[in-house]
Image 1: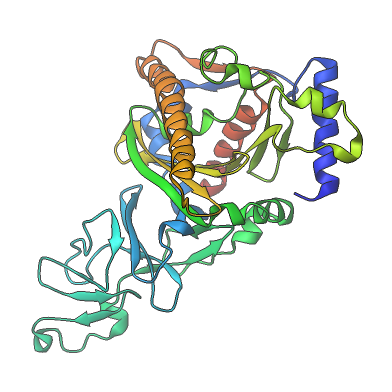
Image 2 (image 1 turned 135 degrees about the vertical axis):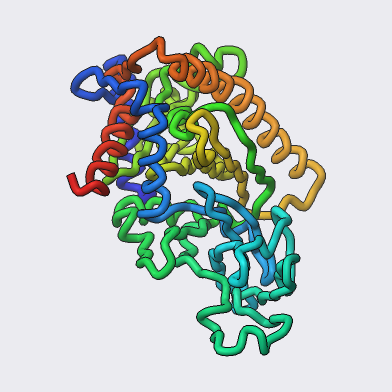
Length: 385
């Protein structure tokens, strides 16, 4: 973030604090339960994951040639691998012969990937290198035997794809010039992957994103954990086309803002949360990044897969540094999993019961209102409405 933008954001937050308010929507918003957890909406939302750019992993998850991550998004098995040429690729994790997985490990490093069914073997670029009984498959060329490749781009320390083979992918255009420029500033802090995991949770994938889209709950849900570190229900908000930025204000902000203008600094007095539509949350946490990715469990509107990665600028080289990052990881998972996600599971059960017809989002929950409006408009656009 450039200095002019930083000072403008500091002024915006200071004004909100002085007026005792937060960023507000014009009116209260309402979203029906069927549009939150209904099976028809859930089925339609699959298009959100196949029609537009998505984050699949931090680039730091596969730093060296042969490093890979096997993943699945909306039922599509993926193999994210760095080739011998240093390029990160997103491949369909499916043998071109009969469709069996060519890699069943979640991560690692391999020179080749081999299907256990009939031993077709593929290199790090996805090219088929070995077919048993070539005579039986005479006439097949490289296009018929190479792993299906999805478009991929490495940008801002993240690996992006579109889950449509042959589709165009332009991440800068997808983000827009302002957001693209902002995210570029955080790339140095995505160089090393300290930890990452994918876990299943019993709530709709959108509720995972919603966890980060309002700060009203900080003083209540996180009263015993994070509450004292932040100022609840005060946030600057910016909407990019589809994407969002929320500024989480730390309790040290007022003292900093009262000082000389030339000494004012957004960090470490704020945390920035970016929602990258439709399902990725990018959190700048002072000296590290958190990347959260929420994907629906196919056929189950009441559960999702949550990917979490914590990245840093450098690999920890001392025991003290390792303890520091482990404390950050433990604090994050304990708080978000144990408090936020436990609450989302309660909401999921309530809405799934059919007893509550809708959810009400206050004017102070502007990001949530925008998010559900954007989802609805994206689906109507896909339908040609």
